Image (cartoon, rainbow, N blue to C red; front, side, top):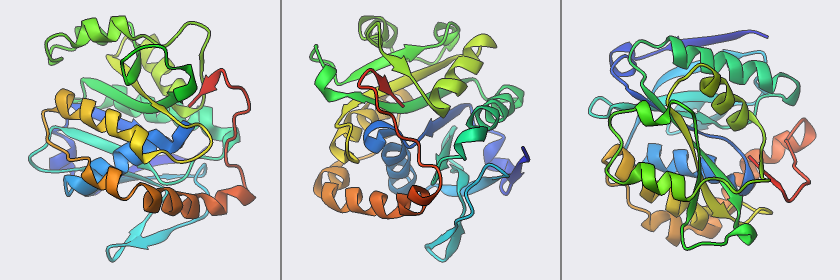
Length: 251
């Protein structure tokens, strides 16, 4: 599989210390969250990923071609956001995810990775709005806010639930390489895009990244966002949109 990252703004990318991604999974939580971060923080595209694993679709947004896999950043922020507008073809998801993980490991300044996903709201058993999956090296990251490690340990992903898709592959790959990373899983409806479920993920990232991203638009435009995501994903229904059937799995 061909995989190459074209860096458009190295001066921004090279100072990023945190990598964030959100895939198309349960409730579209990951994709909605990273889309909202990019929009509300006025982030710029700083790199693109060209891969033979990319579905053959592009679109136009704000007078610029929108490619399947893009990385965003901003001069005054210390994190980069990877947004997959479409999923890689299923038969190359493992290879694509491993290559992206290798790039993270090889980047000289990246110190931490946050992966945003969803977990079935019908499995909620506590007052917390998030469950977590930390890598073994998670605690070695020195910039975690006070009390967050305890919060993570109290709200680990329930035993018996399975992680699936690119998020699982990347988190597992980084865990094997002792890189600090964590999955942030917001409770969400599993059968439709859930912008309201993404609110909890955005609010937690505000704390972790020390930013102030408002969630009013997610709440106000929930129905519009749902319909827009369905429209974006429509081409994939003819190819390989990944569908999970087990209620014990999430992506």
